[in-house]
Length: 489
Ligand code: PMP
Image 1 (cartoon, rainbow, N blue to C red):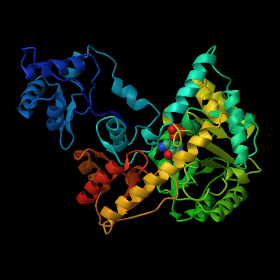
Image 2 (cartoon, rainbow, N blue to C red):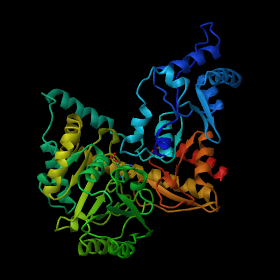
Image 3 (cartoon, helix red, strand yellow):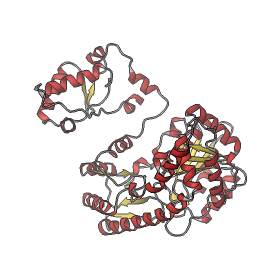
Image 4 (tube, rainbow, N blue to C red):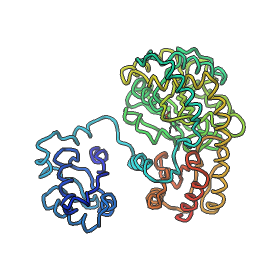
Protein backbone atom coordinates (compact mmCIF):
# COMPACT_ATOMS: atom_id res chain seq x y z
CA UNK A 1 0.00 0.00 0.00
CA UNK A 2 2.80 2.38 0.94
CA UNK A 3 4.33 1.94 -2.51
CA UNK A 4 1.09 3.03 -4.09
CA UNK A 5 0.96 6.39 -2.40
CA UNK A 6 4.66 7.10 -2.62
CA UNK A 7 5.28 6.27 -6.29
CA UNK A 8 4.45 9.58 -7.89
CA UNK A 9 2.89 10.81 -11.06
CA UNK A 10 5.15 11.47 -14.00
CA UNK A 11 5.63 15.02 -15.00
CA UNK A 12 7.49 16.10 -18.08
CA UNK A 13 8.74 19.47 -19.16
CA UNK A 14 10.02 18.13 -22.48
CA UNK A 15 8.41 19.01 -25.84
CA UNK A 16 8.98 17.36 -29.25
CA UNK A 17 11.04 19.35 -31.75
CA UNK A 18 8.71 20.42 -34.55
CA UNK A 19 11.57 21.50 -36.78
CA UNK A 20 13.37 18.13 -36.75
CA UNK A 21 11.39 16.48 -39.55
CA UNK A 22 10.83 13.37 -37.39
CA UNK A 23 7.10 12.67 -36.85
CA UNK A 24 5.93 13.97 -33.50
CA UNK A 25 4.49 10.62 -32.33
CA UNK A 26 7.82 8.94 -33.12
CA UNK A 27 9.71 11.51 -31.04
CA UNK A 28 7.29 10.85 -28.17
CA UNK A 29 7.77 7.08 -28.41
CA UNK A 30 11.57 7.52 -28.35
CA UNK A 31 11.39 9.96 -25.44
CA UNK A 32 9.27 7.66 -23.28
CA UNK A 33 11.48 4.64 -24.13
CA UNK A 34 14.54 6.63 -23.12
CA UNK A 35 12.99 7.65 -19.79
CA UNK A 36 12.06 4.06 -18.96
CA UNK A 37 15.28 2.44 -20.15
CA UNK A 38 17.38 4.89 -18.16
CA UNK A 39 15.42 3.98 -15.04
CA UNK A 40 14.27 7.57 -14.57
CA UNK A 41 10.63 6.52 -14.89
CA UNK A 42 10.13 3.42 -12.82
CA UNK A 43 7.48 0.72 -12.69
CA UNK A 44 4.21 1.85 -11.12
CA UNK A 45 4.61 5.53 -11.97
CA UNK A 46 1.40 7.00 -13.28
CA UNK A 47 1.18 8.71 -16.69
CA UNK A 48 -0.80 11.95 -16.84
CA UNK A 49 -4.10 11.81 -18.76
CA UNK A 50 -3.98 12.04 -22.57
CA UNK A 51 -5.39 15.53 -22.35
CA UNK A 52 -2.67 16.64 -19.93
CA UNK A 53 0.04 15.03 -22.06
CA UNK A 54 -1.26 16.77 -25.20
CA UNK A 55 -1.03 20.03 -23.29
CA UNK A 56 2.43 19.36 -21.84
CA UNK A 57 3.88 18.18 -25.16
CA UNK A 58 2.03 20.81 -27.16
CA UNK A 59 0.62 18.26 -29.65
CA UNK A 60 -2.84 17.12 -30.73
CA UNK A 61 -4.56 14.54 -28.61
CA UNK A 62 -4.56 12.17 -31.63
CA UNK A 63 -0.73 12.32 -31.70
CA UNK A 64 -0.66 11.29 -28.04
CA UNK A 65 -3.10 8.45 -28.73
CA UNK A 66 -0.94 7.13 -31.61
CA UNK A 67 2.23 7.25 -29.52
CA UNK A 68 0.58 5.69 -26.46
CA UNK A 69 -0.90 2.88 -28.59
CA UNK A 70 2.53 2.07 -29.92
CA UNK A 71 4.11 2.16 -26.47
CA UNK A 72 1.31 0.00 -25.10
CA UNK A 73 1.94 -2.53 -27.85
CA UNK A 74 5.56 -2.77 -26.60
CA UNK A 75 4.18 -3.67 -23.17
CA UNK A 76 5.64 -0.55 -21.65
CA UNK A 77 2.34 0.50 -20.05
CA UNK A 78 -0.26 -1.23 -18.00
CA UNK A 79 -3.75 0.07 -17.34
CA UNK A 80 -5.69 -0.57 -14.21
CA UNK A 81 -9.38 -0.08 -13.67
CA UNK A 82 -9.85 3.45 -12.38
CA UNK A 83 -6.11 3.86 -11.91
CA UNK A 84 -5.15 5.29 -15.34
CA UNK A 85 -2.02 4.28 -17.24
CA UNK A 86 1.13 3.23 -15.44
CA UNK A 87 4.64 2.13 -16.34
CA UNK A 88 4.47 -1.67 -16.40
CA UNK A 89 5.96 -3.50 -13.45
CA UNK A 90 7.43 -6.71 -14.67
CA UNK A 91 7.76 -6.93 -18.38
CA UNK A 92 9.35 -4.92 -21.06
CA UNK A 93 10.08 -1.85 -18.99
CA UNK A 94 12.11 -3.85 -16.52
CA UNK A 95 14.08 -5.51 -19.32
CA UNK A 96 14.63 -2.10 -20.85
CA UNK A 97 16.11 -0.77 -17.67
CA UNK A 98 18.84 -3.39 -17.98
CA UNK A 99 18.22 -4.85 -14.56
CA UNK A 100 18.80 -1.55 -12.80
CA UNK A 101 17.79 -1.44 -9.13
CA UNK A 102 14.11 -1.61 -8.28
CA UNK A 103 13.97 1.94 -7.00
CA UNK A 104 10.30 1.70 -6.14
CA UNK A 105 11.08 -0.93 -3.55
CA UNK A 106 13.69 1.36 -2.01
CA UNK A 107 11.47 4.44 -2.22
CA UNK A 108 8.61 2.62 -0.53
CA UNK A 109 10.87 1.28 2.22
CA UNK A 110 11.89 4.70 3.58
CA UNK A 111 10.43 5.66 6.95
CA UNK A 112 9.36 9.12 5.86
CA UNK A 113 5.80 9.30 4.57
CA UNK A 114 4.93 10.99 1.28
CA UNK A 115 3.26 14.37 1.31
CA UNK A 116 -0.49 14.42 0.83
CA UNK A 117 -1.07 14.41 -2.93
CA UNK A 118 -2.88 17.77 -2.88
CA UNK A 119 0.16 19.31 -1.18
CA UNK A 120 2.44 17.77 -3.80
CA UNK A 121 0.31 19.37 -6.50
CA UNK A 122 0.30 22.74 -4.72
CA UNK A 123 4.07 22.62 -4.19
CA UNK A 124 4.59 22.06 -7.89
CA UNK A 125 2.01 24.46 -9.32
CA UNK A 126 2.96 27.39 -7.09
CA UNK A 127 5.80 27.95 -9.52
CA UNK A 128 3.55 27.96 -12.59
CA UNK A 129 1.20 30.69 -13.60
CA UNK A 130 -1.45 30.23 -10.86
CA UNK A 131 -3.14 32.64 -8.49
CA UNK A 132 -2.07 31.52 -5.03
CA UNK A 133 -5.14 31.93 -2.85
CA UNK A 134 -3.96 29.70 -0.01
CA UNK A 135 -0.24 30.36 0.17
CA UNK A 136 1.44 30.83 3.55
CA UNK A 137 4.13 33.18 2.29
CA UNK A 138 4.41 36.96 2.51
CA UNK A 139 3.75 39.07 -0.57
CA UNK A 140 7.12 39.41 -2.36
CA UNK A 141 6.23 43.07 -3.02
CA UNK A 142 6.60 43.70 0.73
CA UNK A 143 10.15 42.34 0.84
CA UNK A 144 12.52 45.02 2.22
CA UNK A 145 14.91 44.89 -0.73
CA UNK A 146 16.82 48.06 0.21
CA UNK A 147 17.52 46.87 3.73
CA UNK A 148 18.58 43.49 2.43
CA UNK A 149 20.89 45.15 -0.08
CA UNK A 150 22.54 47.22 2.63
CA UNK A 151 23.11 44.20 4.82
CA UNK A 152 24.38 42.12 1.94
CA UNK A 153 26.82 44.89 0.98
CA UNK A 154 28.04 45.07 4.55
CA UNK A 155 28.46 41.32 4.54
CA UNK A 156 30.41 41.38 1.30
CA UNK A 157 32.80 43.88 2.91
CA UNK A 158 33.23 42.03 6.16
CA UNK A 159 33.02 38.35 5.55
CA UNK A 160 36.31 36.55 5.91
CA UNK A 161 35.21 32.93 5.88
CA UNK A 162 32.16 30.76 5.57
CA UNK A 163 33.08 27.85 7.78
CA UNK A 164 30.63 25.84 9.85
CA UNK A 165 29.29 27.59 12.90
CA UNK A 166 29.03 26.36 16.47
CA UNK A 167 26.38 23.68 17.15
CA UNK A 168 23.72 26.03 18.54
CA UNK A 169 24.19 28.58 15.75
CA UNK A 170 25.80 32.01 15.28
CA UNK A 171 26.50 33.59 18.67
CA UNK A 172 25.53 37.12 17.58
CA UNK A 173 22.19 35.87 16.24
CA UNK A 174 21.42 34.04 19.47
CA UNK A 175 22.45 37.14 21.46
CA UNK A 176 20.13 39.31 19.38
CA UNK A 177 17.29 36.82 19.78
CA UNK A 178 17.83 36.69 23.55
CA UNK A 179 17.38 40.48 23.66
CA UNK A 180 14.16 40.31 21.63
CA UNK A 181 12.82 37.44 23.69
CA UNK A 182 13.42 39.41 26.89
CA UNK A 183 11.25 42.18 25.45
CA UNK A 184 8.53 39.55 25.03
CA UNK A 185 8.80 38.44 28.66
CA UNK A 186 11.03 35.42 27.99
CA UNK A 187 14.22 35.65 29.98
CA UNK A 188 16.66 33.06 28.66
CA UNK A 189 20.40 33.05 28.01
CA UNK A 190 21.66 32.42 24.44
CA UNK A 191 22.67 28.92 25.59
CA UNK A 192 18.95 28.04 25.63
CA UNK A 193 18.46 29.05 21.98
CA UNK A 194 19.16 26.78 19.02
CA UNK A 195 19.09 28.16 15.48
CA UNK A 196 17.29 25.86 13.04
CA UNK A 197 16.70 25.81 9.29
CA UNK A 198 13.18 27.17 9.67
CA UNK A 199 10.82 26.03 12.38
CA UNK A 200 9.90 23.05 10.26
CA UNK A 201 13.31 21.66 11.09
CA UNK A 202 12.67 22.35 14.75
CA UNK A 203 9.64 20.07 14.54
CA UNK A 204 11.68 17.46 12.72
CA UNK A 205 14.42 17.55 15.37
CA UNK A 206 11.89 17.22 18.19
CA UNK A 207 10.15 14.33 16.45
CA UNK A 208 13.29 12.30 15.96
CA UNK A 209 15.18 13.37 19.04
CA UNK A 210 12.74 13.45 21.90
CA UNK A 211 9.72 11.27 21.47
CA UNK A 212 9.17 7.55 21.58
CA UNK A 213 7.33 5.84 18.75
CA UNK A 214 3.71 5.46 19.75
CA UNK A 215 3.64 8.75 21.66
CA UNK A 216 0.75 11.10 21.10
CA UNK A 217 0.92 14.71 20.02
CA UNK A 218 -2.24 16.69 20.74
CA UNK A 219 -2.87 19.58 18.39
CA UNK A 220 -5.64 21.98 17.58
CA UNK A 221 -8.14 20.63 15.07
CA UNK A 222 -7.54 21.77 12.37
CA UNK A 223 -3.77 22.32 12.54
CA UNK A 224 -0.77 23.03 10.36
CA UNK A 225 0.80 20.00 12.03
CA UNK A 226 -1.73 17.73 10.33
CA UNK A 227 -0.52 18.95 6.94
CA UNK A 228 2.96 17.60 7.72
CA UNK A 229 4.12 14.01 7.99
CA UNK A 230 6.94 14.83 10.39
CA UNK A 231 5.52 13.29 13.55
CA UNK A 232 3.62 10.49 11.81
CA UNK A 233 6.79 9.46 10.00
CA UNK A 234 8.53 9.17 13.36
CA UNK A 235 5.77 6.82 14.54
CA UNK A 236 3.69 9.27 16.57
CA UNK A 237 -0.07 9.72 16.60
CA UNK A 238 -1.56 13.15 16.20
CA UNK A 239 -4.87 13.75 17.93
CA UNK A 240 -6.94 16.76 17.00
CA UNK A 241 -8.64 18.74 19.79
CA UNK A 242 -11.46 21.09 18.76
CA UNK A 243 -11.27 24.85 19.22
CA UNK A 244 -13.66 27.65 20.01
CA UNK A 245 -13.09 31.37 19.38
CA UNK A 246 -10.69 31.55 22.36
CA UNK A 247 -8.47 28.70 21.23
CA UNK A 248 -8.01 24.99 21.92
CA UNK A 249 -10.61 23.32 24.18
CA UNK A 250 -7.85 21.68 26.14
CA UNK A 251 -10.07 20.17 28.83
CA UNK A 252 -11.06 17.55 26.26
CA UNK A 253 -7.51 16.20 26.59
CA UNK A 254 -8.14 15.15 30.20
CA UNK A 255 -10.10 12.00 29.39
CA UNK A 256 -7.73 11.02 26.64
CA UNK A 257 -4.61 11.11 28.77
CA UNK A 258 -6.16 8.85 31.38
CA UNK A 259 -5.86 6.08 28.77
CA UNK A 260 -2.10 6.44 28.49
CA UNK A 261 0.48 4.33 30.12
CA UNK A 262 3.01 7.04 30.93
CA UNK A 263 5.85 4.58 31.33
CA UNK A 264 5.65 3.31 27.79
CA UNK A 265 4.46 6.39 25.96
CA UNK A 266 4.74 10.14 26.22
CA UNK A 267 2.39 12.79 25.09
CA UNK A 268 2.69 16.47 24.46
CA UNK A 269 0.77 19.40 23.11
CA UNK A 270 1.56 21.28 19.92
CA UNK A 271 -0.18 24.63 19.74
CA UNK A 272 -0.13 27.78 17.61
CA UNK A 273 -1.74 30.21 20.08
CA UNK A 274 -1.28 33.36 18.01
CA UNK A 275 -3.14 33.58 14.68
CA UNK A 276 -3.37 29.87 14.35
CA UNK A 277 -2.66 28.15 11.05
CA UNK A 278 -5.13 27.53 9.40
CA UNK A 279 -7.98 29.18 11.37
CA UNK A 280 -6.39 32.53 12.29
CA UNK A 281 -7.73 32.14 15.86
CA UNK A 282 -5.96 34.17 18.55
CA UNK A 283 -5.90 32.36 21.89
CA UNK A 284 -7.25 34.63 24.64
CA UNK A 285 -5.23 35.62 27.72
CA UNK A 286 -7.53 33.58 29.89
CA UNK A 287 -7.24 30.44 27.78
CA UNK A 288 -3.45 30.76 27.69
CA UNK A 289 -3.23 30.99 31.40
CA UNK A 290 -5.62 28.03 31.97
CA UNK A 291 -3.94 25.95 29.30
CA UNK A 292 -0.52 26.55 30.79
CA UNK A 293 -1.72 25.55 34.27
CA UNK A 294 -3.40 22.44 32.87
CA UNK A 295 -0.24 21.29 31.09
CA UNK A 296 1.92 22.05 34.11
CA UNK A 297 -0.40 20.11 36.43
CA UNK A 298 -0.39 17.14 34.03
CA UNK A 299 3.34 17.30 33.36
CA UNK A 300 2.61 17.64 29.67
CA UNK A 301 5.27 19.47 27.63
CA UNK A 302 4.15 22.11 25.15
CA UNK A 303 5.53 22.94 21.73
CA UNK A 304 4.50 26.53 21.20
CA UNK A 305 4.72 27.57 17.54
CA UNK A 306 4.83 31.35 17.19
CA UNK A 307 5.26 31.60 13.41
CA UNK A 308 2.67 34.40 13.01
CA UNK A 309 3.01 36.18 16.35
CA UNK A 310 4.68 39.32 14.95
CA UNK A 311 1.94 39.91 12.38
CA UNK A 312 -0.75 41.66 14.45
CA UNK A 313 -3.03 44.43 13.25
CA UNK A 314 -4.79 45.83 16.28
CA UNK A 315 -3.72 45.22 19.83
CA UNK A 316 -0.50 43.32 20.55
CA UNK A 317 -1.37 39.65 21.30
CA UNK A 318 -1.20 38.34 24.89
CA UNK A 319 2.14 37.06 26.18
CA UNK A 320 3.29 33.70 24.89
CA UNK A 321 2.98 30.50 26.91
CA UNK A 322 6.76 30.47 27.19
CA UNK A 323 6.64 33.82 29.00
CA UNK A 324 4.71 32.05 31.81
CA UNK A 325 7.11 29.14 31.98
CA UNK A 326 9.28 28.83 35.05
CA UNK A 327 9.72 25.07 34.91
CA UNK A 328 11.00 24.46 31.39
CA UNK A 329 7.68 23.04 30.22
CA UNK A 330 7.54 24.89 26.90
CA UNK A 331 9.61 24.46 23.76
CA UNK A 332 9.14 27.72 21.93
CA UNK A 333 9.51 27.84 18.13
CA UNK A 334 10.16 31.08 16.26
CA UNK A 335 10.88 31.81 12.61
CA UNK A 336 11.59 34.66 10.20
CA UNK A 337 9.62 32.90 7.47
CA UNK A 338 6.24 34.57 7.83
CA UNK A 339 7.30 38.04 8.85
CA UNK A 340 10.37 38.48 6.66
CA UNK A 341 11.68 35.82 4.28
CA UNK A 342 10.89 32.09 4.17
CA UNK A 343 13.83 31.49 1.86
CA UNK A 344 16.32 32.56 4.53
CA UNK A 345 15.40 29.31 6.34
CA UNK A 346 16.03 30.77 9.76
CA UNK A 347 14.08 29.60 12.79
CA UNK A 348 14.88 28.97 16.46
CA UNK A 349 13.96 26.74 19.38
CA UNK A 350 13.99 28.07 22.90
CA UNK A 351 13.94 25.49 25.68
CA UNK A 352 15.82 24.02 28.63
CA UNK A 353 19.55 23.87 27.98
CA UNK A 354 19.64 20.07 28.07
CA UNK A 355 16.97 19.86 25.36
CA UNK A 356 18.60 22.51 23.21
CA UNK A 357 21.99 20.75 23.51
CA UNK A 358 20.45 17.42 22.54
CA UNK A 359 18.63 18.88 19.52
CA UNK A 360 21.76 20.84 18.54
CA UNK A 361 23.72 17.60 18.58
CA UNK A 362 21.20 15.97 16.23
CA UNK A 363 21.24 19.04 14.04
CA UNK A 364 25.04 18.79 13.73
CA UNK A 365 24.60 15.21 12.58
CA UNK A 366 21.90 16.21 10.13
CA UNK A 367 23.18 19.34 8.38
CA UNK A 368 26.05 20.96 10.36
CA UNK A 369 23.90 24.00 10.99
CA UNK A 370 21.65 26.43 9.13
CA UNK A 371 23.32 28.44 6.36
CA UNK A 372 26.05 30.67 7.83
CA UNK A 373 25.15 33.38 5.30
CA UNK A 374 21.51 33.38 6.36
CA UNK A 375 22.41 33.45 10.04
CA UNK A 376 24.67 36.40 9.48
CA UNK A 377 21.98 38.30 7.55
CA UNK A 378 19.35 37.50 10.18
CA UNK A 379 21.62 38.67 13.00
CA UNK A 380 22.28 41.99 11.27
CA UNK A 381 18.57 42.49 10.56
CA UNK A 382 17.89 42.22 14.27
CA UNK A 383 20.94 44.10 15.56
CA UNK A 384 20.58 47.10 13.24
CA UNK A 385 16.93 47.68 14.18
CA UNK A 386 16.02 47.17 10.49
CA UNK A 387 13.71 44.31 11.43
CA UNK A 388 11.71 46.41 13.87
CA UNK A 389 11.24 49.34 11.52
CA UNK A 390 10.39 46.98 8.66
CA UNK A 391 7.85 45.16 10.87
CA UNK A 392 6.00 48.41 11.62
CA UNK A 393 5.39 48.94 7.93
CA UNK A 394 4.81 45.28 7.20
CA UNK A 395 1.99 45.12 9.76
CA UNK A 396 0.30 48.18 8.27
CA UNK A 397 0.50 46.83 4.75
CA UNK A 398 -0.69 43.41 5.81
CA UNK A 399 -3.63 45.01 7.60
CA UNK A 400 -4.58 46.77 4.36
CA UNK A 401 -4.38 43.47 2.53
CA UNK A 402 -6.57 41.87 5.18
CA UNK A 403 -9.11 44.71 4.93
CA UNK A 404 -9.43 44.55 1.17
CA UNK A 405 -9.61 40.75 1.31
CA UNK A 406 -12.50 40.95 3.78
CA UNK A 407 -14.26 43.46 1.51
CA UNK A 408 -13.95 41.06 -1.39
CA UNK A 409 -15.27 38.25 0.79
CA UNK A 410 -18.29 40.38 1.77
CA UNK A 411 -18.95 41.28 -1.85
CA UNK A 412 -18.81 37.81 -3.33
CA UNK A 413 -19.15 35.23 -0.57
CA UNK A 414 -22.05 36.60 1.45
CA UNK A 415 -24.74 33.94 1.64
CA UNK A 416 -22.37 31.31 0.26
CA UNK A 417 -19.89 30.92 3.12
CA UNK A 418 -19.02 31.90 6.68
CA UNK A 419 -15.60 33.20 7.63
CA UNK A 420 -13.65 34.75 10.48
CA UNK A 421 -12.10 38.20 10.66
CA UNK A 422 -8.48 37.60 11.72
CA UNK A 423 -6.68 40.19 13.86
CA UNK A 424 -3.35 39.10 12.47
CA UNK A 425 -1.53 36.38 10.57
CA UNK A 426 -2.31 35.36 7.01
CA UNK A 427 -5.54 33.39 6.90
CA UNK A 428 -9.31 33.67 6.57
CA UNK A 429 -10.82 30.32 7.50
CA UNK A 430 -13.84 30.04 5.25
CA UNK A 431 -16.59 27.46 5.55
CA UNK A 432 -18.91 26.98 2.61
CA UNK A 433 -22.58 26.75 3.52
CA UNK A 434 -23.65 24.26 0.87
CA UNK A 435 -22.48 20.74 1.23
CA UNK A 436 -19.85 20.64 -1.48
CA UNK A 437 -16.53 18.86 -1.60
CA UNK A 438 -13.64 21.29 -1.24
CA UNK A 439 -11.42 18.75 -2.99
CA UNK A 440 -13.71 19.02 -6.03
CA UNK A 441 -13.59 22.78 -5.71
CA UNK A 442 -9.79 22.56 -5.65
CA UNK A 443 -9.86 20.68 -8.97
CA UNK A 444 -12.32 23.10 -10.55
CA UNK A 445 -10.25 26.07 -9.38
CA UNK A 446 -7.14 24.57 -10.99
CA UNK A 447 -8.88 24.82 -14.35
CA UNK A 448 -9.25 28.55 -13.71
CA UNK A 449 -5.60 28.75 -12.74
CA UNK A 450 -6.35 29.29 -9.03
CA UNK A 451 -4.64 27.35 -6.25
CA UNK A 452 -6.70 26.69 -3.11
CA UNK A 453 -5.84 25.05 0.20
CA UNK A 454 -8.81 22.83 1.12
CA UNK A 455 -9.47 21.93 4.75
CA UNK A 456 -8.70 18.24 4.32
CA UNK A 457 -5.03 19.12 4.34
CA UNK A 458 -5.31 20.39 7.90
CA UNK A 459 -8.29 18.75 9.49
CA UNK A 460 -8.93 15.45 11.16
CA UNK A 461 -12.37 14.95 9.62
CA UNK A 462 -13.73 16.03 6.27
CA UNK A 463 -15.52 19.37 6.13
CA UNK A 464 -16.29 22.22 3.79
CA UNK A 465 -13.64 24.77 4.71
CA UNK A 466 -10.85 26.52 2.87
CA UNK A 467 -7.75 28.24 4.17
CA UNK A 468 -7.81 31.49 2.24
CA UNK A 469 -4.67 33.59 2.44
CA UNK A 470 -4.58 37.33 1.80
CA UNK A 471 -0.83 37.40 2.37
CA UNK A 472 0.58 36.64 -1.05
CA UNK A 473 -1.53 38.09 -3.86
CA UNK A 474 -2.27 41.78 -4.41
CA UNK A 475 -5.78 43.06 -3.62
CA UNK A 476 -7.01 43.12 -7.24
CA UNK A 477 -5.84 39.57 -7.95
CA UNK A 478 -7.33 38.36 -4.66
CA UNK A 479 -10.69 39.89 -5.54
CA UNK A 480 -10.68 38.44 -9.05
CA UNK A 481 -9.93 34.96 -7.68
CA UNK A 482 -12.54 35.18 -4.92
CA UNK A 483 -15.16 36.14 -7.49
CA UNK A 484 -14.25 33.09 -9.55
CA UNK A 485 -14.45 30.81 -6.49
CA UNK A 486 -17.80 32.30 -5.47
CA UNK A 487 -19.12 31.69 -9.00
CA UNK A 488 -17.94 28.09 -8.83
CA UNK A 489 -19.66 27.56 -5.49
N1 PMP B 1 4.76 26.63 11.79
C1 PMP B 1 3.68 27.15 11.21
C2 PMP B 1 2.46 27.40 12.04
C3 PMP B 1 3.68 27.43 9.84
O1 PMP B 1 2.58 27.93 9.29
C4 PMP B 1 4.85 27.18 9.08
C5 PMP B 1 4.91 27.44 7.61
N2 PMP B 1 3.76 27.20 6.91
C6 PMP B 1 5.95 26.65 9.76
C7 PMP B 1 5.88 26.39 11.10
C8 PMP B 1 7.23 26.32 9.04
O2 PMP B 1 7.86 27.45 8.61
P1 PMP B 1 9.43 27.58 8.43
O3 PMP B 1 10.03 26.22 8.43
O4 PMP B 1 9.58 28.25 7.10
O5 PMP B 1 9.92 28.40 9.57
